[in-house]
Amino acid sequence: MAPKKVVKSAAAAKKKPEKVVNPLFEKRPKQFGIGGALPPKRDLHRFVKWPKVVQIQRKRRILNQRLKVPPPLNQFTKTLDKSLATSLFKMLLKYRPEDKAAKKERLLKRAQAEAEGKPVEAKKPIVVKYGLNHVTYLIEQNKAQLVVIAHDVDPIELVVWLPALCRKMEIPYCIVKGKSRLGTIVHKKTASVLCLTTVKNEDKLEFSKILEAIKANFNDKYDEYRKKWGGGIMGSKSQARTKAKERLLAKEAAQRMS
Image 1 (cartoon, one colour):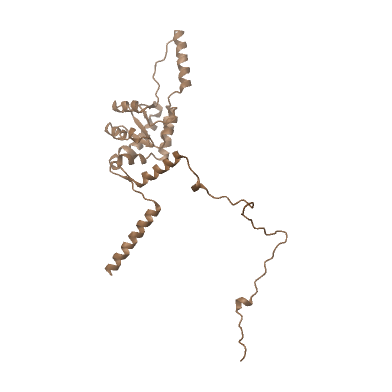
Image 2 (image 1 turned 30 degrees about the vertical axis):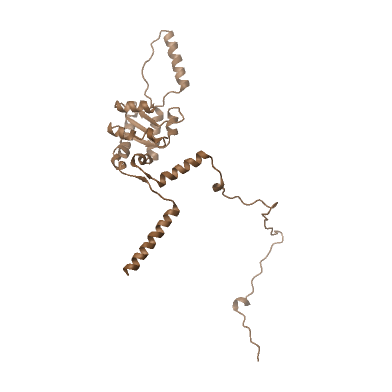
């Protein structure tokens, strides 16, 4: 019986070109064992034991997303947009109240003037008013022209009623990001609410434009925000499970129809 002829494939017939190795560059793979090379840097963000304060902040943020948030609390997530907030803070910085050093200097000059028998200026300066009780009094007396509320006051019950009061008294109000940002204006760590009672003549045109924009964003949309619930946003895994269930139900319904 004749031996079978082995037919070599065309691919096997072609010889692979030999890789040219440069003798100057020796291949030395890294050994990551004990006493070997250092391992490459990894993102250890998930393995960090964060401080308790940070953990609570993050858990609270997630809870606010998951749970249904009633409209009075949900309105504090609707803050002033960046461009308008920048122009508002520029305006507020013009009317910063005096700090301790400036007050001491003013009182010293006043005492010297009184001692020398010179007339003392008793004109009240136009400054930003702060403090929850003081601002509430100014709103009730209808003296406030603009009320600025921080979105992250804790507990939120301190200011949750302020938008309703401002709307009742027909005073423009806005909610801005950061109680610490408001605090820097009045030389404090934080401030929950600020208020302007009047402005100088040269700033009146700019101030009226800011008021119009704030009224359109907050006072006129009060009824809309009053009915809008927040939260109810589930995590990515939960959303994927819900979508899978919906797809299965839709498939079953289609099969029944056919």
